[in-house]
Image (cartoon, rainbow, N blue to C red; front, side, top):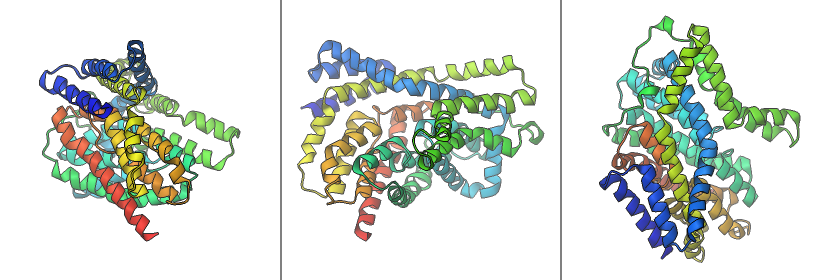
Length: 438
């Protein structure tokens, strides 16, 4: 019954948004209240769950998306994105531009949280598409597939790292198997799928695309452009490496951990961009600040929609839906790796959060994973693959993609949701193949 109510809630959400054209944020709150009541939650608990979900979701994202929007605006206006795009095109050629973006997304995605990587690189995607005349889906999906795969499969991302720690899995092996699994998942969900959906209409948020084609002397140098744009990656990556090298409490680890925190890294990168891409190029501070304010106003509704998705997710978690779904599958006699993927995938579909789905599944299967009957590292990856399954209207990533690419819900389901499903299924197949070999 709880699972049926969740499915009816998701269906109602789609009807409100698609059929009745009600704003997604309003729809999320309406459905969250109705679902919480239907699941038997006390009325005050329904409201507190929505508030908790919104607060936890926006607590980090409002800072990252805010700073990311500002950084993206400066990168676009200064010509840094145009400089990087022209360099990538020159190095790889237009025919191979998808692979350039796959590589960029993979390198950036390893040390960086998905949401941070998304807001940092999205201006680059928009500029590459505009400068080459290629479809936005053709160039965007390969990069986002790379970001998604690293988020679900590879440490130091929160979910695979936490699950590996819970299971006592070897981080190095998990990383190695994860990379092997990632390669086919990225290729199929990225360049190949990107070519299939290249004709689906999408358009960038205008604030992140400078329509003016700058002359060579008007743009910053390539190294300045790359270093400023990828500074968050460098800082977060340094923190991750420091955590592996130095013991807890070490001063170097504390300092790099602080400046490598995603929020601090984004702030420092923004300040560097203000100077190197703005003030040093003759722009006035007042002009830069006006531009930054305008960039943030463009993502206000995105933040509200993401907040609504967070509230909806929390109602599902607090109502006990996760435990109910897990209980249905826990006693199954199928392969432990397939079982891990199935539980994680179902939780992902119903709850929306990849991290919640992954960690909840890990808690359920902890005795099995530590019994010695299954490879711990592959168990981590099976759960990670399942946690990426079929992202849809209850996932904040779905709404980020939809709003930044100015797409309809239907087209977002046909592109983003299918891409995530391909990543998940291909990842599972990769895990099963590796399990047969080792």
